[in-house]
Length: 148
Image (cartoon, rainbow, N blue to C red; front, side):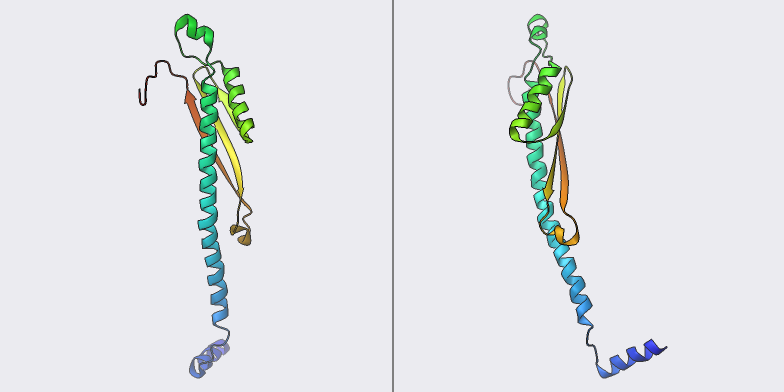
């Protein structure tokens, strides 16, 4: 009951010293965290788009490595998996990126992983955001234009 008397005394006398400080501190932290989410999430989204672009380009580079014997003898667009993987890895290496590459006789799949350092979220303990993107390219015979 003692705390109730103190509270009633403060209300009656208008003594509210020190009441704004916790609110301002919490509001400031919340605003910094929100600004960090906006800024750093935007940067992470940009890094994801760049990773996707790189994965797509590397997959296309790998999908150009046809098994020429199968193509010449059977008119079939079939990949040479070791050459396709090497071409995709070479593209990633030339771009200065790390990723995983898998190839079959039909497709090349590339996954690129990137880590971006945060700017404002470091203030609340988040040092980096990891993003990844995966793309698959398929060797197709008889493409004459977009959508065909």
